[in-house]
Image (cartoon, rainbow, N blue to C red; front, side, top):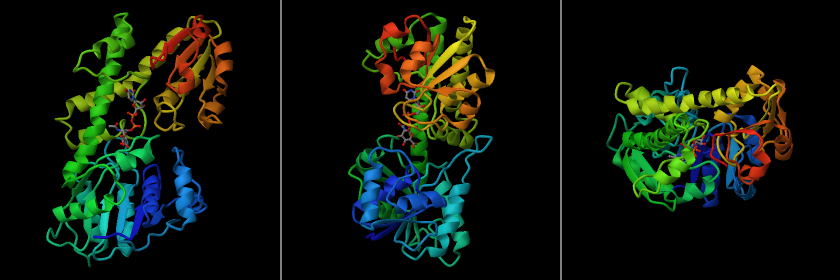
Amino acid sequence: MSFERVSVIGLGYIGLPTAAVLASRGLDVVGVDVTERAVNTINRGEVHIVEPDLDIIVKAVVTTGKLRATRQPEPADAFMIAVPTPFKGDHEPDLSYIRAAAEAIAPVLEQGNLVVLESTSPVGATEQLSQWLAEFRPDLRFPHQHKDKPDVNLAHCPERVLPGHVLHELVANDRVIGGLTEGCAEKAKALYQTFVRGECITTDARTAEMCKLTENAFRDVNIAFANELSIIADKQRINVWELIELANRHPRVNILNPGPGVGGHCIAVDPWFIVSGAPEEARLIHTARLVNDGKPYYVLQKVRQAADQFKKPVIACLGLAFKADIDDLRESPAMAIVETLAREQLGELLIVEPNIDELPVSLAEAGCRLVALDEALENCNTLVALVDHKPFKHIALSRIASKVVIDTRGLW
Ligand code: SAJ
């Protein structure tokens, strides 16, 4: 199967880099997004998200006319769906964005098309997508009904790129491609081989769905181990960083890093999809989520105890992002901690976040100040390290010796 025109539905952190890379390989790419601002920004050759080098490649492919954004889906050979899959209040997966994408592309689907679901999804979502498409287009044969020669081919190929390294990992990582039929998987493999240098391995859709969830749950469980260990070590008056460094000298031990909690929209979300699919069985995965979600409360308790020692606590909070050296504050445990401190009015809050120019409204309105690192170090009596951004690693120990320090990332 050859692909000349590909449509990417959802131009966010995954969709836009994917669209740009496909376009840079010479394919005609039509990006579709419901947000007018995103569409207009991209059509000017600019980007609405922060990711190293993405601006350069988007500018290049928009200038050559290989990438174009629109709000209205158009016919194409293949459709790649990269929309959010958040969870609802009860941690049940919310597939409404996938359903909306299905409804949007259904009118332009044609015989011979390929539809790939890239969004991280619970087991069964690709089949559900096939059912939705069939409802919208009863005139076409879909693979959940017709295993032999469906009119439209459907596969799941979960994204697995690390924010901050997306353009490299999009091309270099191996891809797991799960088809609703073997033919669907082979057709999707042909699409990915146009831009992936890693290996493209085919399987069925359910295994591919579970594979992505497994990768992120594996990391979550391992971080939970480190986070639990940090609390135990604290109680036993042991330095957890030294402890982990020593334990990791064993040839078969590799403990991850404790932190203030797990953030982002992947690791803290995807394990819940496993739990909701097998609530009785997923005991360890469920507990790991609770351990990681509980860590910010432990950090808060430490800060309260520290602030209690001062008549006028001046608390410097280093970092707001959900992890090091990015500007993404969404689902960030550091943000949650600082917001609670601000609400409780424990003292003066000095925030240092070198990757943003302005504090989020919730913090600005609560009277927090965004300051430079030097100013925070000069004026604070309590120092809380929440993110291991590069500039924080170079702080001279003599500058913090007289402060009460809560180092959640093992910076010093
Ligand atoms: N974290 C720790 N300790 C560690 C490692 C991470 O506390 O030792 C925290 C981070 O500070 C952050 C959170 O975990 O708050 C998640 O960060 P991350 O770097 O582990 O992962 P993400 O969310 O940026 O990206 C993950 C990646 N998945 C895996 O590494 C298995 C990425 O490959 C996926 O594509 C991405 O999720 C996704 O989109 O699903």
